[in-house]
Length: 251
Image (cartoon, rainbow, N blue to C red; front, side):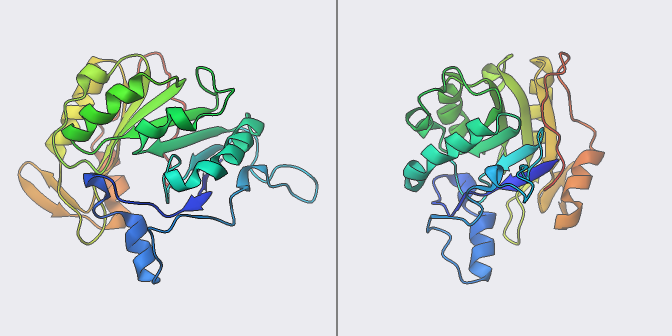
């Protein structure tokens, strides 16, 4: 089973990839301030139980964590202590945590983190070369057992090959969605796929985005087709040791 866990909601734009943030877009449609960071009613979702005292989220589930905020955002420092306790309690589930704030991670870790929790994958997001060179050296020097790199929204051709080794499970790439989406070029995606293959790192083309360039031609792709069109490219790659924990079903 796969499910999402947005334990707090709201964020602050900190880099180029945040310009057309889907959280801001969705919140503005209901007159909500997306910059206000608040705990949600689902804060304790992983440990909720049924009347029979069983966890509502079954053992072995993948829990995609904090996709309407950032797990390491400053306003959540106090709440995060309890979040780590729930993640530790649900050691039978896999938690996937993406972040643009990898520089804050070290100061936000629980005391028993050690070299990482077995059930936590940290995903460092980079959208261009500037952010790759800023964030990935920090990412690689942190104690993490399972790592992925998200190049989404991919805004330009990025060279990350020097950062790829056996510590990286998967590189994922995707374009930007929404009415004002910036272009994603298939050549940029293929370059990342080739870099990952050379280093025997898994690669996943997540989605095309709304404005997708292939062979110099611009395609405007509806949201409902962006994932399926990416799959048709058939450029995903699984590292030869099979060390890919996640499935890629859209939530």
